[in-house]
Length: 356
Image (cartoon, rainbow, N blue to C red; front, side):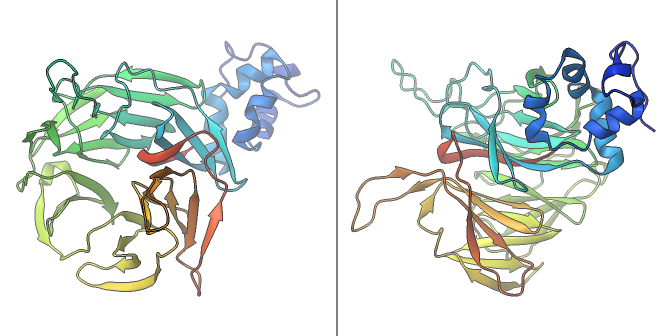
């Protein structure tokens, strides 16, 4: 049973006439998240309830939590949107208050009902010196709380990072590899505890090519993949360190759907087993988009945004807000379109899932 904080709910008896505090809160917990802004207009009491941790604990207890996509694109600057797949709608959240213009090459994950944006920097070049390293990588960490609709700064990482691997294991955030400047890659890895707001170093990556890397979680283990290299570094428990495996995985955008890895390579989508691949479908519909994001949500793969590159009929580069969806578990997988992003467009700088 969810416990009510009496200091927050001193007028809960009139939240819903004729119902107890606990029952009223459980009723509100069943309301879809996209309707919350409207419900907050009903009364001060309702606003307090809808911004309470107790409400979201009730959503978890009742199994009424919802999964959203969190997306940040190049346009407009530092703006994030949430996509609700059940209602096929987009919601805009407050602009990330970083002082860095067009923050890019960051890590983004979610845990504990919050969105986290870590590291990254700007691709802008200093007009006086031509130096790109001034803000290429940072230590900063931001969290967004959808309950209060506020961004907060968290304890920074121990070193600046850009183009690094970032994943969540057992509710904690692990970052590894990447670059501290546009010329220097690192092997350092560390783990963040959101509840304690602390960072602790863990074993370094044993294999550190001068290449951008990304991370995926499969089977409860973090897998670090370096662009252009076949070696995959795997870690289950931080205390056990890393294992280096040569799986011969295909290279390209990756998405994990229900624990299975899918890769888009050379215009085709493959189901990637440990050391073999199985063709799923052609990605002809989306192959012309550059800088899009590919992510798994539920039983689906989403290909989000990007730019349409020049071809024989059009020499311009066109930013897009399009979303293409593939249900990989169906007998005959086929691409379909979802509602396009309502505000964002162009190259996708960050894309992750958020459970609220």
